[in-house]
Image (tube, rainbow, N blue to C red; front, side):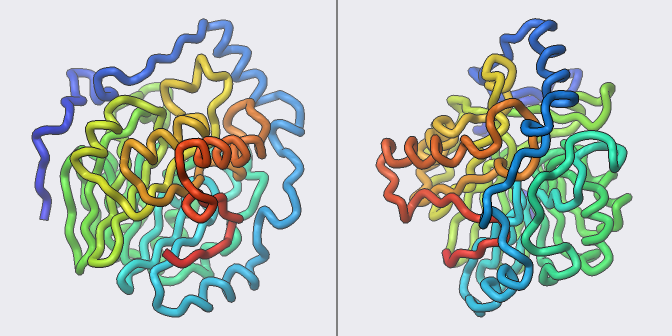
Amino acid sequence: MIDHDPALPPHRNARGFHNPAGSPQARGTTADWLRFLRDVSFGPKSLRQPAVPAGHVLDEATALAQLASFGEQDTLTWLGHACFLIRIDGRTVLTDPYLSPYAAPVPGIGPKRFAGTGISIDRLPKLDAILLSHNHYDHLDAVALRQLSARNRDCAFVVPLGLEPIIRRLGFRRIHELDWGETHADSGLTVTALPAVHFSSRTPFDRNRTLWCGFVLTSTRQRVFFAGDTGWGPVFEAVGERFGPFDLGLVPIGAYEPRALMRAVHADPEEAVRIGRAMRARRVVAMHWGTIALTTEPAFEPPARFTAAAAKAGYTADHAWVMKIGETRAL
C-alpha cells in the first residue's frame, strides 16, 4: 500500500529534487572546497585513519552472543555509521547498509573505514526489509548489497524515488520507491518516507536526480524515526508535529566540519539533538560517526558533544544512547 501525503513541502523542479524551503545553504568559497578536498583526501593519517579506542567495536563473538541473548525482544544493533539492525515485532530490518571497507565507486580508492562492523555480512540474520535513505557510497554500498542479496533477494527493499533501477541491478526483487510522505505497509510493519536536508549523487553528472529521505518505521509496539543523512532544517518542526511522537530517534551526529561547507548537508551533534526534540523522540541514538572519516572534525569528538547537548535538552543518560559498534540494546 502506498499513500501520499500532499501536505508535505514540494521538492521537485525541472532539474530534479531539492531541499525543503528554509533549509541551510553552504557558504564556502571555491578555495574552501579545494582546501577541504585536499585535507580529507591527502591529509594526515590521524585524520583519515585515526586511532580507534579500545572497546569502540565489539568482537564478533561478543556481538553475536549479545544479540542472541535478547531472544525475541525488540532490539537495536549498531553496525557503524548509519547502519542499524532493528528487530521489531518479530521482523528484522537493516538501515543504510554500508558494510564494506571503502565508500567509493572503485574499491581501494577513496575513503576507507577505520572501524569494523561488529558483525560480518555473512553472520547477519535473514532480513525482512532494508531501508535505504539515499545513494551516497557510505549509505548505498554496492559491494555489501551484492553480498546481502544472495540470502535476502526477496526481502522488502524501500528506497526514495529514482533508486529502483540500481537496487534491482544489485539482485533484489521486491523494491518499493517512496516519495516524501508515501507509505509502504508489509506484514505488520509500516514504512513512511520523510523529508531530509541533504542531496544525492554517485557521479559528477547526476546530482539530485534521485531523492533522499528519512524513514518512520512503525509496528504494533514501536515507532522509530531514522533520520538518514541530514542537516538541520525547520522542516523537522513541521514534520515532527505531523508524524511524531517516536519511541526512538536515530540521528546523525558526525561529518560536520568545516561548518560553513557541511551545515547544508550534515547536522552537528547539537543539531542532531535538536532534530530529535523537533521529531518528539522519547529516546535519541547517535549514528553517522566513529566509522569513516568524511570530514575534518576529530573522529571521536561527536559523542561528548552529543551527550552534553542531550542532557541540556532534557534527555537523561538512559534516553541518549552512544552505542559501541556491534552492540545490541533492548528497545
